[in-house]
Length: 269
Length: 278
Ligand SMILES: Nc1ncnc2c1ncn2[C@@H]1O[C@H](COP(=O)(O)OP(=O)(O)OP(=O)(O)O)[C@@H](O)[C@H]1O
Ligand SMILES: [Mg+2]
Image 1 (cartoon, rainbow over the protein chains, first blue to last red):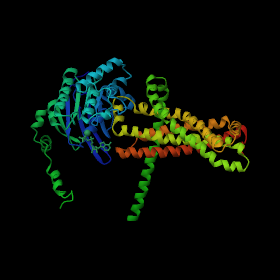
Image 2: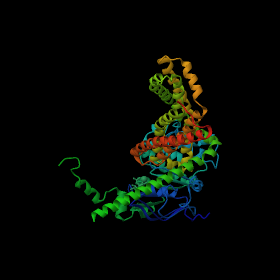
Image 3: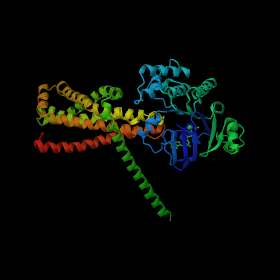
Image 4: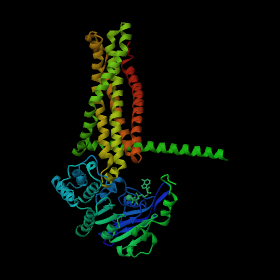
């Protein structure tokens, strides 16, 4: 296979919900073996973008390719072998409530009917992945009993516990809700998977520290398009006001003006 | 001008609503077809049974007490209502048979169905709806597992298979409840009760009731799963889906009941001639 070819490619993808246009004629090529970070304000369409990559959402216009094969026109059945090579960490974790943590982590392997992994191996791999995210011994708990950060970490363990390892991992805000040292572990984990297992990662995040640390390339989504695209260094040196404000965490003047406009919102004069 | 605008708006919203309804209807039948399509394969696989049995436990075993209670009350109420009338007319020797016919062919399956719709339908819709709004259905799809096969098929199948069994419980307890009032409370000779039952209740009545139960169970399972899979986001969406699932199941039960009664009566008359109960 041609190494230079992008593993994922979106061509002129447009997606609207009702009147709201979320993705607007978007092009994206994701390189094999690299970690691509997508940043953007809340509601800018990052999660929607990730869902297009595994066919959970279909573009209104445009095309999506996986390893050179067009996938946005495939039906659910033919998507299965492709989805089995991709792991998805959902923003809200999407752990299965009725299964234990251990069963959740083993789920992608037990349900993979195309490749039967022995039970003992599933358990062993699950145990090790839980250990990596700092949840050794949590196997028999159920997700509703866990704290927010613990759930996130179970979701991360579920995404990496695959045999063979996934080709691509899509992370939707992997470090949100984690304490800083734990977030650091996850950043290192993403790096480790890239270097040792050659996993391609796409990381959606608001966490600039994490973005700068894991990203080979950072893109910023704004109004349905990319307004920045380059190395972390290039991003830091960008002179686009939108990008600058995002990195420095400074609101736009109009946004601040809304506070004074609604100064009496609590009933005081 | 505003008047014609209002009419235009009304027409367009009516048309829009109609199209949405038709789309919904089409989606429902596609959903049914997909759910049913997995039954054959899953019945011959260990995984399929592993998914089915926990549902059978929840839908079947756990429903037995309420269903039995329902049946008992139905039998008792019918007997209390009919006793004085039949006694006065000198027909008390027929009462057991009449009550048991209505229990096994009509009230047992219908009330067991309604009970099941409330107890199981609500819970199924809430469970699947919550999974839907917390993206667990998307997670299943992203892992290459079909949510319909994984979640809807076992639930539908469990409802379909267990509704008739539960109806049997309701029937037995209905007869018992009626007997309780007849013999114990009213102090009538219980042999009259049982002999009239034996004489009047035919296998036909029993089968009619069980056929109804299968259809009720299937309808409850299908409607509840569908509503859960297609609920609107948020806690409100899940709640609304539960209400809709119950109402739709209930109305479907009544509609199926009516049609099945017409069909079964027609068949009976054609094959065995008119049957007089009085
Ligand atoms: N299924 C849907 N139906 C309607 N609108 C949707 C749907 N999914 C997303 N949207 C809208 O699309 C926009 C982008 O949503 P998305 O979840 O991608 O945001 P995001 O960039 O991931 O934000 P955040 O950082 O807060 O997670 C939002 O305004 C949202 O309201
Ligand atoms: Mg998001």
